[in-house]
Image (cartoon, rainbow, N blue to C red):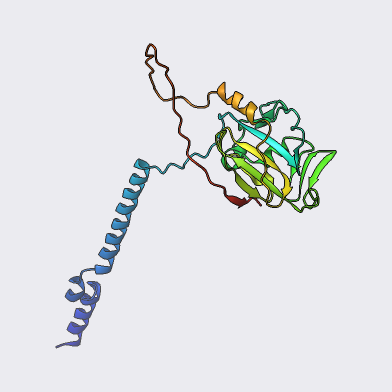
Length: 252
């Protein structure tokens, strides 16, 4: 075969991309990449659609802005309660208020005071001279209860006792910094102070007053009920209360 003829065949093969064999191959890598991209795209679209149709709702932790709670509060020093915190007028910026009778009103005004932010530390911050720490309770510029002081010669400890409701008989006991204790329900009873080790804090003196406040305050819409009076018979409502247990928790 002439050299010129061979040269023409080589040039023709180069122009066609390597001849008939190259033209007949299927680009598997290219099509595989397209398939993977398509599958991922379909998955992302489906997942986004599911997320839109099934939004995850976070549980609401009360108190929140709009809630109006009350709790009895007292400060105990060794064997007696000190005077109630002074009056603190309600305002658009302060979440805590009191008339000075030992009943504290909690109505969160900002998101920082909602839920886990509704602490006794926030109550103390509402005053100029009141402060709670793991080593002392400052009631005023002239009175501070310090850890380490003895009660009739007995060593003491700083506690916070929280009764979950007016009907609760056993409190949850916190040790450490009272400012970290959270007000987590309406009608709680809270006492902070120093007691001899092994001694329990008593309920605050304003407990009876809280009962009167609760009797005249509606905090939630009641369920639909109907009562039919029967002549000659008394109509009564029975309330069942679950028991509670004592738990000691470190607050600091």
